[in-house]
Image (cartoon, rainbow, N blue to C red; front, side, top):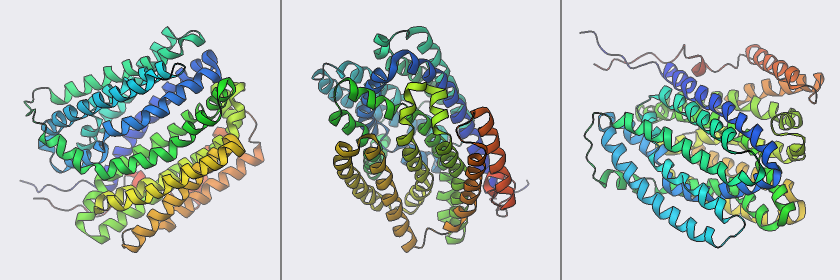
Length: 478
């Protein structure tokens, strides 16, 4: 019998990233159709109320997710034969946590007559999140199914939104549509995963994962504080209809930022198994995986940030309508924060692989405190721009702290890998600026894509991992 060979590292990463990223991007593009309808139907005030409710519920969703996308995925990757058992137990535990979190939100929402109802309806998605087994599929590296599920979910959401939301008073239906779409797809995926299996319904594996994920939950709590404290404090400081409008101008362009974050998440989810394996193989393999991850993160993230910042006004006006264009300035700053998360995802995978999640939690805890303090100081004085700059400053400090810790531990190497993709993105920005950033997107986007591609080729900055053609020699497994 011929010996089995370990699959090529680059092919693994490229294949996983293409499957996840294509699904993420296509699903977000489908979701943009819903956003176009909602922004024009509901207006900035109602969209601001929806954004505020989402920010509140995001914190409770952290308890339901409980680090399963990281610790749970790792457990499945290490014991794929136990995937049904791990999935069933983890889902039961997540449902218990979801019920507790929903009860708390229901109590809080009951005391908020204006935004309480939309907050409670938004919180229903905690249950569909608990049923979502995509963390198991990622551990099994069955990412095509995850990508397809994302597209189907957003397609259902779009159909429901266009069917049920026709005037501003229908705004409370929007989170209900999202819950219905999430529940449908999550239930289908869970059923397909457990079909034919007889998993032990013991809570022990799930409780174990929940316990192991405490540092991840802590880090997630601090990360979401950095990302959402600005939204919540804007809602507190800027009250009334004017405050809700400001909230809409700030949160609605976040939908474009979330598309960038979805691509970042897909990239780092694809690299996570490879980095975990590389850490076990030794420093040489780990450093190679680290350099590849940094290069890919810069190559994917830099053009999104630079290009998005250049065409921010026309992009927001095209997708959301002219009344949202005033949100372009803070959008540019928030997009820069998202760019830092492309590199932050590399740091997180290194912390996870090396078992230093507690150190990561402390770093992000300090960054979150800095963020809240800056928001409290800047929002009353500078409004939306103050909130945006507080977020960017906290992200930069957190990334710097993580880099220092990992560098001292001898884990982080290859930061120079980000320079060439960044230079190519800046060259692209110069070309778009020369053509005219405020001109039609039909001109500036193709010009930017071509300029960036040529820049990558000229600088020899196309990451090998994303080509999927090269990698270390395969190892004989048997």
